[in-house]
Image (cartoon, rainbow over all chains, first blue to last red; front, side, top):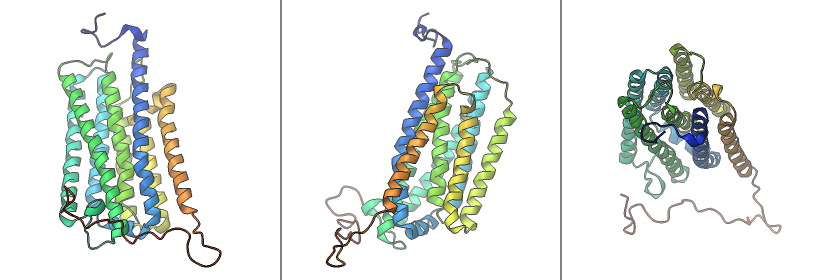
Length: 212
Length: 127
């Protein structure tokens, strides 16, 4: 078995071992990603405990309706990725590519709305840290809320960009016929990454936009 | 990729339908519910439910054997530990006072965290 013609490696002992190892590795990476976001969630929790009134006011300042649209876009893109895995498991590479392209379109729509939100915050001065100059909210708490807002949504948007690159690479692999019903480990683990980014948003959305 | 049950597309679509309903529910409750103290637990409960659905069915955790099942819940456990203990610490701080009067032992925090006005010439960015 030469490595150029087949994705399978002899040293795993069996193909099942290789795909198990790949998936376990991905789950461990996802666990580390959870711990990365944990730090921001802890910071959010502590400062929300200190400045509850300001957080409510600042949350009312955000475009909650658009954030709900973003949530629906991401949830639907997760469905498309799950369907892509479902299709490739039965060898339908074409439909896998189509499902992933739809998921990428929805993800891009998410990022466009996010960019519009950022631009709005930029014009009104709801910026992180010392650049905060929004008159309607007090500096203390208000600037902290927007610092956390930009850290959480910014880190999430970076993960979205990485996820979009992964999905694009998978679509290209589907085009050149790299994935079959027997071998599609990259599709499984790439899909896991996209779903995890979706899961992070499921928490960021109520914590930032629905503070009551 | 051994033999797995031939699941239908409609199972995934059904999960997606539940996720959409929960999203709209959390939006309505969060904007028009006026739940007061209950709003945060309700919002987090809905988010946890949605996460469980995504992890179990979209991420196929429900069909994973062995160690792959354990990693994600363990990371959630560590998240809960760090979050919970940090919050417990923040919520149970006691403001100590000197025995000879009401003067606090801790320095009073400044009214603002700003050190310089935004856009000071020493900064590269800013307005």
